[in-house]
Image (cartoon, rainbow, N blue to C red; front, side, top):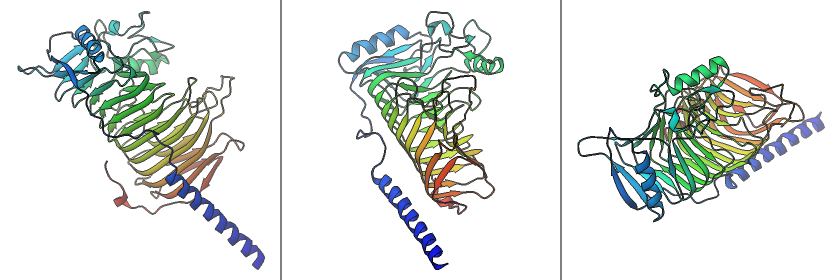
Length: 427
């Protein structure tokens, strides 16, 4: 009996040392943006344009940005002396070293005409089975381009479209009902960008996703506010895709879909991403996936408050577009009034008819200093016994009355019901 007790105590001791070692090690060898990121500095101004509520600025803005970019300077948008605040425009392209300073009270507004964003097949503003028929409102390209200022970029998602009887958001709702895809423009795309900046802007009413960095290496999003209605379908806040070295900080995001969703499709991994000191209002939470077949790794999500989101921290994938998700660190997270505080799901929206298998694997997922202040669902659902989810927890507290789904998961550490409301703050 003494020998059995000794062996049991010995196993507990070494298991505890293992957990402490892992958590200690990962506190100091963080997966994160490999750059040294500081608060952005607004570049020098080349030319100033004055608002006019009755004018189409598409050509003037694009031409001025292109000219100023050659001097490595940017264009400033200001209000007029008679109170005009709007710059109405169609698609805008910002090349390397180009940019816009959208000053306080200025509203850069996407003209609500689908033909302006059409890629040439007359699909923008319609439904089909693909949903990729529109150019974005703003495209950032190349290196050292940016958007700055305390003004607004308004996608006019809720305004009736020219020569149509519906809005962008109504089209998105109809797509869901009819099992189709809407052809709506993104607000901002970053294509193969390098050292791109989005600083202090207000992004509102996007017709579709707000910010999509695609195959981008080096992006700083600092002090941005995203505010689009909770019932505006598919209006994700920020969706890095096959991108790396990204910092999103000091931002507030409320929207109609994922507040942030990190994705990695066929074009490569998403990695070295820091999401620091942010607040999420309504939306679908802090997500990874569902496209993870390119691999997602080295992600740090620290100092985040989620309040009134549908989901809290979520990793979602399936055998159609799954891949390896590893070295994900959640630290100092407060979750309040959230239906599904933690969701790790390897069978999300699975298409069983697809014969190609891309196995989702969630490994080395770390939770430290997590406070779930209201009861909800916690789901840890691994694919099978050969592909278990593996998580490590330290100071993980949930509200009494929460429900659990635990399948094919290994949890190192304890999750308890000792709640400390003082640990939560707004960033």
